[in-house]
Length: 588
Image (cartoon, rainbow, N blue to C red; front, side):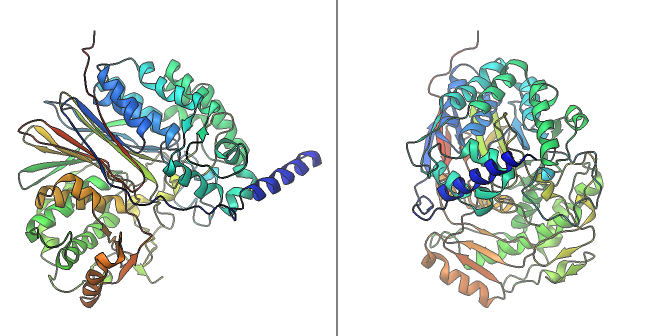
């Protein structure tokens, strides 16, 4: 490295560090807001940003269907919600075509061919190009469109191109998101994040403020190539070349052959019955579908009933948490990138749900260690809560539930130089330490060990519920392992308690994941749940109560199957926008 370059780099780092010291302008979370609710029979899109929901609704009014609108939503979110909207990540898209089977487009990232089960045993840097799995988002959206879309591909991508080129007006949630990461010490100073700072930092070196405009010309050029050339531009063309240059520069693992061989898969949804409804979820390597269904079928055995006095009662939280504890143990023991064999179905069957529910003490907490069975527990990684979910329904009743992610907020924080998009850090979702499971939540079970071309286990839980042949509910959430329980709680409230969807989305949530052996309570007002926390502790639970804890962002749609009126609800926790298509044009 030339001395002149080193001096320039050090000088730039010092200037950026000074600009982003954060001392003068503290970064504060936007205050709580109300959920946003819309109703329509012509189609609804509920996503993290107004631009994404509005652009997708325009696609619906132009005669596009729910999959067309979902493709536009996903590409626009890559521009307007960069912490999780993405080109360089992956996810799962549930599709319910009218009169046909519900399917899942699995576009989860894959491990590069060069890895083995022990490749990351001594690795510590989770924000490095080596953490990137082979991205699946562009292939997944293209696969969904090829099978189910109606409008031309280019028409669906161009709205994102225009927003990236012309700029996005920064609102309070985007300002908070950008500033929260630009002010982090390592992001401010580490040379490997120089492109991140260039792309996402304010041109004047200050905090982003409401009303500023985020312009992303490199991303606009990348999206334009995708609009013109399709997914091949990303996996074999000019974009692939830039990604591979980044791998070489940043010591990543993805090869040209890894990109060329990536394939998004269309799979049958997993499903289960609950009180006259059919719940459809994503199959492995998503753990969400099977785990949510297992939880709901345990609830059916427990015969929980709603109350009018409180949003949740201590009895309900106790029983629902005991269900979570058991379901997450089954998740850890059995799930990974595995085929849906009869044996795996049996491990998550209604009979198994009833067997697990029968072990719950209705008054006293169970020790997580006591249900470990053959999983050896060491007294003592983590899945980031930064994902994004959106829900779509069109005038014909076709529904899409899509969750996708970069893993942590802004993924690896490595921006592909000149291409304007972030690389994921999904390799962290594999079990890095074969055979090692501890009380802090590190899991080392065999099904999710790392292997070439394997898809890492995910908690993403895009969910569609049908009542008869009609869609009744479309939901999902970000939130790492909390995703499963956010969706579970939405389903319990709407299907078991018959609580209106706006109320179910608005209220406080809680989470237990087997290990660590803790119930975490979302406290919108600490006094709301303090008495419940005390009663849970008296029953033997470990409880964590924090006013700063926010669980998920469950942008959802419910449908009255008698009138076909759909209600879209945007969660308030990270912003969000519910928009409706007022008039639908006929496709020529």
